[in-house]
Image (tube, rainbow, N blue to C red; front, top):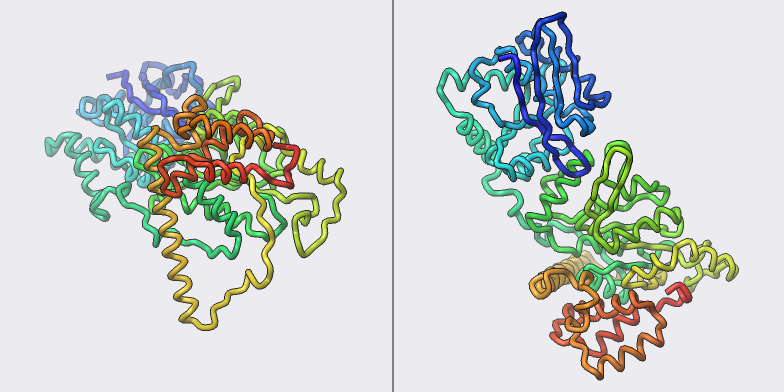
Length: 534
């Protein structure tokens, strides 16, 4: 056989696109030609493959070797094709006799070390999911063990080296074993250390540690409502008032992800070359980019279509601290994903759509010095400076926050614990732990009820369905008209108040949305510091 083909997978954004690796051996001066729009790292695979084959006690063909990566119009990047190139070359040169039929149609990907070892590559999770969808077997580096465990595909095999693959061919020939039996044995070996599916493990309350929050009853109530309905939250307050603590607490209040959500988030992390962290796989992501973040780092893009922070926060929380310090252009780029739940990136070489269904939480000071709302320190800023400072965040972006609250600074008495003994402190900690557990359960039940009722969280209720969702009677409509006129909110702001009212009713266990729910929802749109921007 002078021609051999091995399927592999390219990584385009967060999608695994099929690539066919074709190797052809012909007479002529020895050489190794790689075609099919390869980038620099792929071109360098020629030397890696040659050294790996030689150091695996095999022979590199003393012929002209041509390798094509099809389709030719798809850019190829990274060393993920090394294994497929090496195996196609060996099959074409008939060095792994009888192996060609056994591995026909099996996808392969992995970077080769010079000694023939297999190194991990990004995007293995989506490659496994794509292979499973197509019903194909796949061989990947064993170093990508977290991806193998999370996807848990019966036709996936992790190998450590090229030598291990050639030994597999000998085993198949000598023992008469089938490739399917080898895959099943490998899956059974992976499951021995942990006898149950890792994605079935629920994250109970003891796995999430909450820091105590002193005072801030209104902020905590807003936090619970935001978590229960998936609403965006903006907090204003002086330095040290606890805004960051509240934001990180929100991500802990959210219920664990479902199986499909875990796989979706794992695919994104895998594409972004991040750690999959199997032990905390069901915890929702929390991303907190620095205020110096650039547009590509936040929304994604770059030369290789890498996901940004808004995609890495998919199904979780994106926390923007010091909101006014972000560049206006970067902040305005959030408008589309906040409405659509996705972001489209178009470049000369590609066009990709990244998921970006995140919950936005932001924090900022009320003025440049930070103490405009502080009761203990006086503000040194003029009205003009305060207006210019708040104006750094555009009105349309502010309008996309459901809850806008002030987080006041606490007195020293509120900050200090009142316990007088270790026993009292332990009892108080136990009571707080029970309260947090109860909040998490209520929030989880609330979100489950919303999904069953309308197929989405309250924050995603379409405007056309709000009247039915809130059970608006003529009396309620009259009350709402007056309330909304007094607030002078936009149409988007009015819809957000209705969605919040529905969430407040759900969280309080009320079937019908009443006047007090609307009034409380409207109170979260009243913020003296943001007067004129809403």
